[in-house]
Image (cartoon, rainbow, N blue to C red):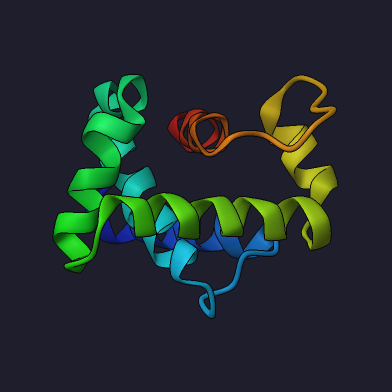
Length: 112
């Protein structure tokens, strides 16, 4: 799968979950998921590696990236497509996933 196809798949998944491009977290998740697809080691150190890499790319801070991704996850959980999220998680999700868990669920889904 090439980069453009990969990007379209990530965009389609985020929009299907109810996260639109009006949220900064959408852009950060989009880029972050693509980084995780290229190198799963990012999932082992989300705060130490992934957020700083996203922040560097978008010329912002790691704390802004973390906050905006958390907001996007909250939007998905409260107003998004929970049925789809449950489906792709492959296990019941009883409480809102953390940003790291959310990234892991989406990355694993797109990998298969």
